[in-house]
Image (cartoon, rainbow, N blue to C red; front, side, top):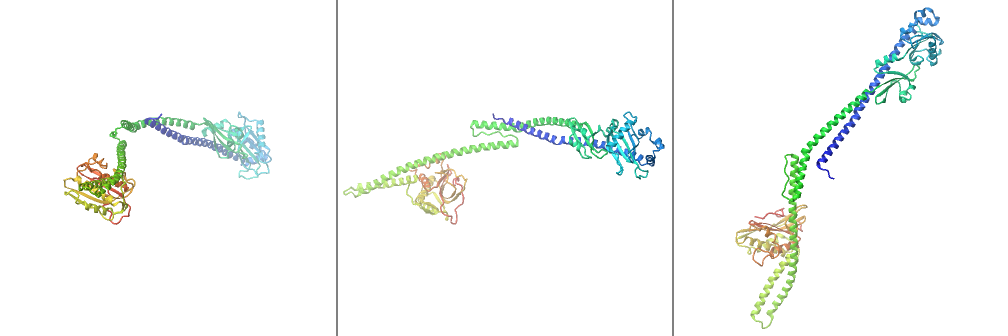
Length: 618
């Protein structure tokens, strides 16, 4: 079913706003959500890096404590002589609590334990626990062999006490001179209290895990990420994890610093996007309704009204009807265009009607020409026999004189009848002709001069026949007959009144697309034409009379006339030309014979281009 203009407009607006909403949604998801994701990743990475920095600061503090003890002359002597005074004044059970460490052990250059303590889970100490931790230290390989130059080692190590911040420092003199007499090991366990303090400062819950402990909870990239790189991994729509690779005390990336927390940025992003989507939806619906209302009022309704008026005019078949003009500028132009179109259609219809009438008239004249030609030909054959017999009558012996006179009258009447048949043959285009190149101006001047004694005494004859016109292919006698017939008709139109008859020749050029209407027997084609024009300012003709002037034997004068213009039309047809008549009752008549030019122009070209449908000459 065909949709109405209003429905199509509504559908178009809906599609446009839907596309706009979709584009906005894509823009939001392509720009806003990634921005929130980047913000979330940066926030988590910042927290993890802050925690890693705090952890490194604790290791640096622990390393400074270890250096204070290991690079001390008293400690250097104690490793050599194991003096009791050093132990009594320095190595007591409260020493670890004072230093805020969970492990302290002295090893000589051979790797033997000189003194060591490890705090238990409850804060107490015990030889079994210390022995276990020392065994773990030896097994881990953090105690350097004698053959290696002793250096600092700082980092994390997973001991029986738990994940421990550990420093291994060579024992040197207070002047940091050697050779080293052994190694001092100091460690602080990262228990829940330490991690809680670290998490509080970092702003998120932190934990230190073995990289293998993440399997399979974290991707391989979290376990194999390079040092100083933070990997942020969403665990669920509401939780995110951040991991930071840590090197243990042996320099291997076997540990990670990890945080798991909520995703407030994502939740905020979802809330923002939801709010934005609802706002945009409300705005689009409201804007769409307002836009449709305005478009319907300003465009759709007036256009629909114009359409209804056009449909009503089409249904009424009233060519005079017009649509109403609105106040809107664009619709006013549209209404004016529609009215112009209706006027053009009416003009085209009138033109079509005139052309049809012209065609019917031409067909009627052609039929009459065929009929007249046939009759004239047969009648001419009879006249030849009559004239021959009439010429033989005077030769009969003993014939009375009266019979010879009667025979002469018969011969004269037959000659006049022959002239009539010649005119009928000329109208039919079948008369005898001798075609040759002619100078139209010369033929017209010669003929017009002979007619000065024939026309009315009160009529003045004016000639405008310039030399140098292109020649035409034609019969001189037939063109003389055209001039005679037209001048005679012009003189008859003047009657007893004073007037003027103008005889002129010239050239016209018809281009492609030019319309020369009201020409008989048909509209001429494009090209150059030479014309003979006879104009008078006599009584003129009305439309009804002008429509019949080329009919054979039609006349407004006395009976016996009416073949003059019919013969002119026949001569125009035989010369592949045309005749145009312009006349107004009471104002005069102009008759123009158009003949195709055949020769090149020579010199002066007459009075130039003139429209075929010229008004009557005054």
